[in-house]
Each structure stands twice: as C-alpha cells, then as structure tokens.
Amino acid sequence: MGESLAAIEKHKIPLAEAATSSLEALKEYSVAKKVSLVFADPAGVVARLQLAKAFASAGDTAKAKSAYQDFLNLWKEADPEIPILKKAKAEYDGLR
Image (cartoon, rainbow, N blue to C red; front, side):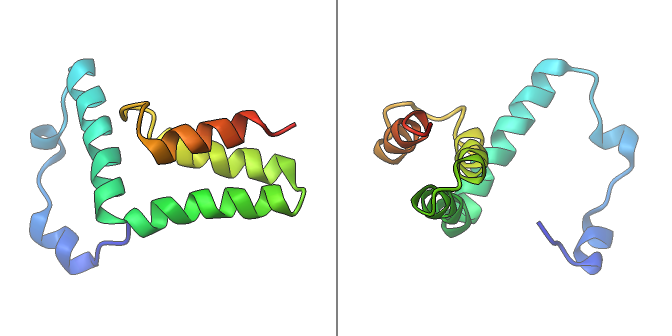
C-alpha cells in the first residue's frame, strides 16, 4: 500500500521466519489482509464501488463489471447480509 523504505527496513524479518507451508495459514492471512484493507482504507474501498457505479452510469459495462468485481472481491469473505454488499451484488447482477 505504499510503506516507506524506512518502515520496511525497520520491520523486515528473514523470509524463513515470515513464511509458512501451511495453506490454511496463508488463507487466514489473506482474509486478514483484506479485512485490514477495508478498515484501513474504507474510503478507498467505497471509491471502488463509486467507480463501478460511474462506469455503469456512463454505459461502459465492461469497466463497470471489472470495478464491481474488484469491490466484491475485497468483500468475498464478509457477511453476505451487509447492506452495501447486498446492494453492490444486485447492481453487478443487473449489468448486461
């Protein structure tokens, strides 16, 4: 997401200490990173949805679908009953 070189240097650890061969651990890490993205940059996540809506409104279905997919991919592990997610899925499904 754009960490400074100083921050990377300060917090770097050897690959052998940071890596795992556990597929389950990697899946959990992936989910945690996506959740942290949603909380760390909620405006950016919502901006993806707004971009999708703008493309749809402009009639650019291909770009709208792509932007909706980006937004929905960030939320794929979320509770499917979250209102913004339900609405985005319905809008995506309504694209032709």
